[in-house]
Length: 389
Ligand code: PMP
Image 1 (cartoon, rainbow, N blue to C red):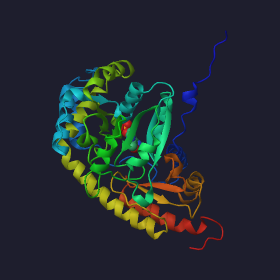
Image 2: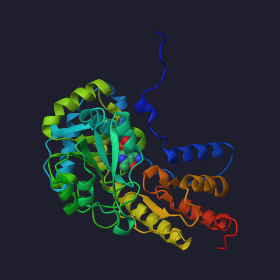
Image 3: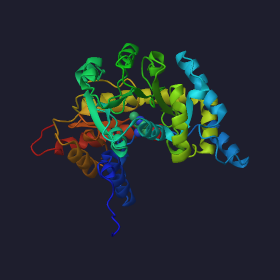
Image 4: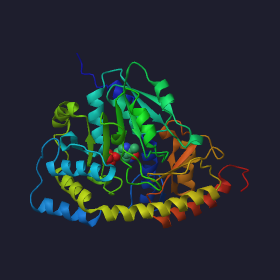
């Protein structure tokens, strides 16, 4: 029999991440000498805090560069457990904490843990572009429940309940949310926890809120999976380090998966993460204060330019803006804005029910946001023929 070089149906079903397409085209333009304002990327422009850099340098110098325990360094697991006690007043035993290769690594472990072919995972809509692709890559079926802009993108437990099927093996909750920047309150989390389906709470944007703090799913229930990490609030996207808190009885199976799929998270990154949790509190505070200023500049600027912003961002670093008055096709619009105005923006289509919207990130510096707004102001009269602004 000749070899069959097809890729799997699951791999073929994984969709491209459109914001990355915009970023990659922007980088191509930059190589040709263009100056691009990047509002398309969900990545802090801050350097990793100095105390974290020093800890990583010391780890390298001292040869702490080998495999660690598959579940992670014990001190780091303890520090994560302590973090839940300090920040949320909940008790998490370090034995329930796994250190992962970013939140993404944790999500891969959970999909492998929970899904058999054809099982479903229920996702928020709009929601993070990669969720459905994680589900598909692990032979599952992504299903969505609606959240509504006019309602502040609040999760409606009744709508979630209505979307459950007998094959639903998990519900993903993301607060603060990418892309809506909505924060769910504790009573909503409690209602979701009571639906009887395993909850995966992606809390990667915790610590980045503008107003009241985001409650953790662990305050609502012990019987959930919580993903978090260092990428966003510690400006450590490139270190690829995160964690997963799981109910105790799932830890042995997760450990087997981690041993086989990843062996362990990177050792140097784990020492860096330890320093972040122990020492980088002030750095996080300073970055959050700067994000709050950027948020106000972007929000005001976009409103002045005529974008509809039905729900103000309460967390993360995104503004999801209604651009349907310009073009209902968000990919075409984002491409034009990049080519013609030299501003990168995220097409809403990436995120499910956000077609016609654009996602603007305020993870870029304030002067770059202001420059992006100026370019949009100059470009808008050319947005479509005959448009008079
Ligand atoms: N979840 C959400 C909602 C995200 O926005 C991202 C990053 N864009 C991730 C998970 C992945 O984060 P990490 O760097 O920890 O893998």
